[in-house]
Image (tube, rainbow, N blue to C red):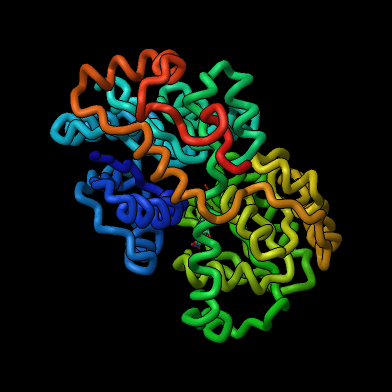
Length: 394
Ligand code: UDP
């Protein structure tokens, strides 16, 4: 069975690192297409090196344009690769322009799309990520949901039950695999002269925050009001916007270059509080039991807010952010386990294997058009494992 993985952005490299390993263990052949969406060495190459992700078979070198330009160019270039390979599955991750481009290119060729991290919603259609998620889910044949809430959401949107497979969160798998390694190999705390639990870690990169001079200034002001040192590994887009908006950094805020994953994990584990607008970093805060303040008005990972591990702090209120950070110190939420058992990537590999190869474009088309009816008809090898094809945990 041949799988083409389309990726291009930092969080996708981290997610793909564990899934690629599981695919290879399951004997599935993978071709990796890197769109080029993230291209700086510390936003891309470092993850391939550290996490031992196989080198991309195709590098499309597309980035730096508007959303529309990037997505359009990616669709064209991905289509050319897919047309040559004609895989059984096209795997896409998360919610970026690369995700949507992969899903559109594949579905136009009648190839089956498997979406990792399906069913998440912020219900904020102003976010480019929200549009990418919704469209990708609805172009996918197989939807790997990380949480119960994601499974419910897909059902509400009318997606066939048999297409949805609860697997847990692949980022949790990554945290288990690399959490201890980070402790062993990362020297980032010493290099930055940081005390364990003596600093706040922050990341800011969402367009809704970085592209608004008011929000960006409020966030920086809020971080500046903290008594602690705030370590801010800065996404290139945020740095660019800060410069063009003339945002000055308070003296307690230490901007550093984006770091590799192992250094990031080490910084997360040892932070007193994490303040972030990143989806992945919110979850990692929980994995390492560090209280989190989310610099947004809403989140896709609502279970962490409900359980008290995460607080939403709208980015229009700088003082509110510093108060939220102060209140979060030492807070522990309820004991929940929403992201599975650390075997999401294995479940994904076995699910793909169980759906079986397609082999020809015509067969892919018929499967894509009627996946539910094929499962209901009980054709061997097409049923998603687990009860009713929906939840493999129990
Ligand atoms: N990350 C990293 N280095 C950094 C900042 C983040 O390795 O300097 C990792 C982080 O640990 C998480 C992922 O990047 O695994 C999150 O990516 P990002 O915040 O860019 O995207 P999002 O999760 O919001 O989609």
